[in-house]
Length: 304
Picture (cartoon, rainbow, N blue to C red):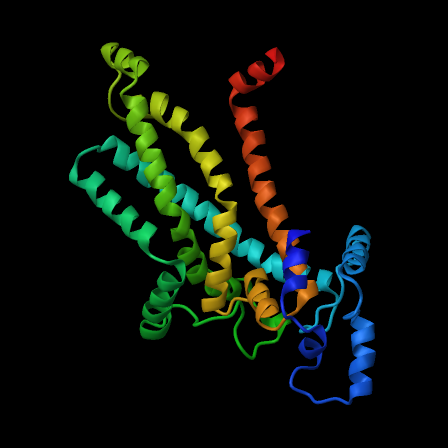
């Protein structure tokens, strides 16, 4: 509702967005305004939009000239592959770096990982994407400059290796967004656990080395790290918008930018709904996993 109100208050003209720079007669413009409901009261527009939304009809995209559901389905599938691979990579790499930094607390390795994480936290995603594009695609030529498939190749001739080759650089760039936060969080939690009384008791019983970390550290740190990783869905979606724009990757992020710049209101509202559902799903999965993995939460809910 808030998104609809903001769009309604903006100076977006759906007729101009539809015809572009083409000039038309006043009669034709009046017919298009009637078709798009330009002069319809705002509350009637919202009710019509909400009714169609409940029926699964998100309208027609003004820039793609096709149903919004088809555009979202196609673009979100591409983005989902990119975000899922980046999410997994950042989680594994961040958790491993956090465990290593926590184990080597105060050493040169710990300081190097902290400096690396601080640099990543301070660096804008689009800046990293541009640097990676310049080094690995333009100068070294290891990866393609952009797009998700080779230019000039029919879709049936695109191989699985071609898609992976185009996906690597955007995935690595987007994964760096979450590495620093998960690594620093894991490090702090592991240090906290290793200073607890039960770990001191385990040390007194003779447990040392990686077995001590594995038995008492990783087991207690993994759950909050997984929860934090799922809670980062909103940052992941926001980062995907920037990365897709830099690499010209045809995902939902690039469609969001195009819809905003070219006043495609139906597509813009649909992407807002999709992004909200995406972030809500991440939070819900985190809650379910937390309750499933930690039996203390289930016992507490039963008592209440």
